[in-house]
Length: 332
Image (cartoon, rainbow, N blue to C red; front, side, top):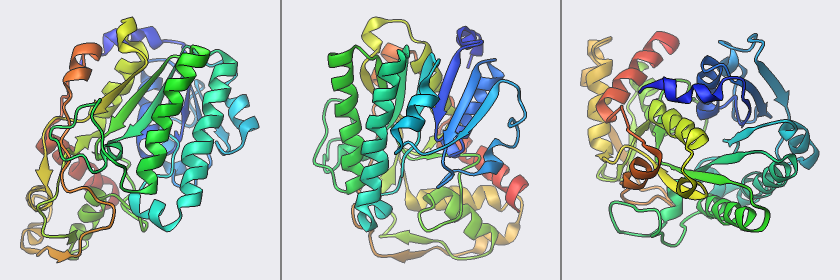
């Protein structure tokens, strides 16, 4: 990817909410490399201070420890900002099923706090993390942005509500927004620990520890697994696109290919066994399907290619190889 087109962000004041999280910290790091002035807002409920280690002493980086559920904190964080990348959220379908109230407080009330603060601060553009979970029970493949189904979890509902609120804030207050529906993002800095760890880092660590990963169901469920650098590219393009018709839109943020869970574990065993040959013999077990999970997910990225110039550089194999290398070097 030619990053020269993003040099317009030099000295731009950018707020990244959830900037200590997996996606947020990768965005902060890239923006700092582009010479932007970056402020991170995070309460460290799911983010980690070690994700900020590489750039916490950068004079262009500012950390605000605070919660998006507090309107005054959001107001202070947005003051003087040109752009906002809103990544802060409580992810995970199972978490939302266990505790729908907190998921709603963070993902809906917190999101609304940020929209109001962004509007009042007069920011140029508000980019936010939407979710492929919004497609719900829609069985059509590939997923296209204007055809969604019924949400299947509290989390999915909260992310759909975000899109509705963003649309209203454009129509009512002329706040420019772009929503990015993330599809199963993975890569460096993604937390492998905790009850709601994403499948790829969780499986990687289990293989590294010579444990048997457990697939929910028979392994035929498939996902459009999307490497972090593709997501960073999408955010940069959303920040800098100048075509009026490209703004106030929702975009799938994915690769446009799908991999089932059996294939995924085979890739992981292949790449990890290059470091530890014993991993190639570890068996994968199967458990029950997980409530709220959709069977298949595959994105069309035609809209993002056409309007944003998006060009995903990392297909699943290349992304997994990069991710495995990072985990082995940092966590083994």
